[in-house]
Length: 511
Figure 1 (spheres, rainbow, N blue to C red):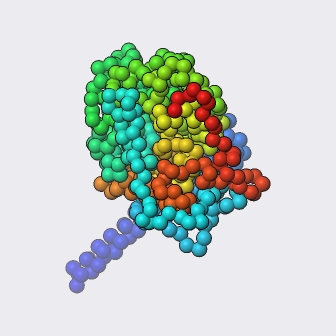
Figure 2 (figure 1 turned 180 degrees about the vertical axis):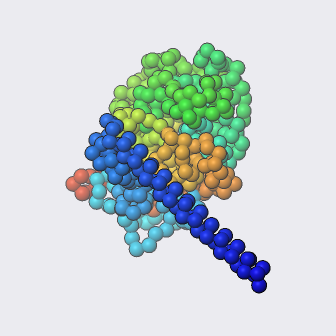
Figure 3 (figure 1 turned 120 degrees about the vertical axis):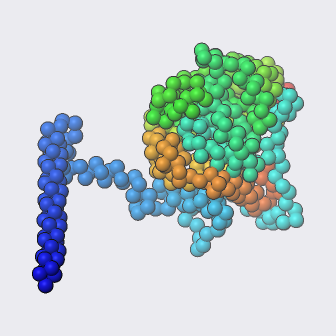
């Protein structure tokens, strides 16, 4: 009995001790919380930077917290399906479905506003093409007859330039494998050729930016041996001289130092941890003649097609290029020309340039196409359109304008799982696409995502053909300006060939 009483008393003492410990911990936590709030109060009252915090210490912090979280909550709770920027929920959901091979089928009608200014309306034929009459969309040769190793491009839709650095290693690997699966090309972006670009064995366009990353020597000059080494790779099909891009015309590429890892630095030939800022233009290209000279030089050095990528500010670029090509000879013409609209941009860019510099693709593409058509250069120079062309309708519109191919970056980012968190420049991308944080990259499973990349490209091509067949033509390359109408501010629509009449080829021009 004495032993039992002692045992019971011991348990009671243990319980009392635990209760005292819990009470003590609770008191300590409460004191620490009060101390933290007091420190926060003093800091807010004494700081001079934020008026709200100075007048409303502690409580005012909720204002900044809600402001920071607002952009993420809006897309889920407050924004309508068609009103969000840069891409609305309806567009993102459509891309996700195509990437997952779930089809682009909807029910009960579209939420697309057919009365909004700029809305696209394709002209359906009264007697659309029968299944038995349809033809496969043919591939197009680039540089045929003008270089030693021309490139036959299979896909209308291709992956636009996204540098390794701007996007992560698993993202590049998934894009490379997906591009091979779908038969489209992958543009390396201006960050140089990484081993991860080569992993999938897809067709590659090697982009050379203003900093010459990946093709420069220790002094920043062209490394001829390195260029030949890259050109010798069978999967590197062409080279692209990047003058500018739609997100930041007049400004070179920007990769914050926090994203410049040792691997990225070694590929680019720069110091790790330092901001990677490209010059705003090529030092050796200051005139149209110098640009055409560089195109001819690079084509001769590599034996492969050479193109140009640029944003457009008006009619001047296309008209002067056509004029100088005709004056000097077709051997100086670029084999392809990538026109990037002012709405482009998948990485870091100054807002002033992203918002206000460079024509939209809606205006830039017809202007450049007209310049090539009027000069008779359209068969010589393949035209590639880029700039928020993430849906089959927008891609089909580009073909109607005169484009031969369509490039998209953000469409494929969505296929990889991008949720439009708007953190591309911060190295904190929650989906692992634009971050070099291994913990965040873990979520991007290459074996799963490369299939979504392939599905998106394949289904985009299928839907472009579907639109073409509805318009009464046998394949997408037969689409013309008469096949699409644009809604005007008045609410009525106008045919694209009326808004931008096809120019006549002047006598004596190239054909």
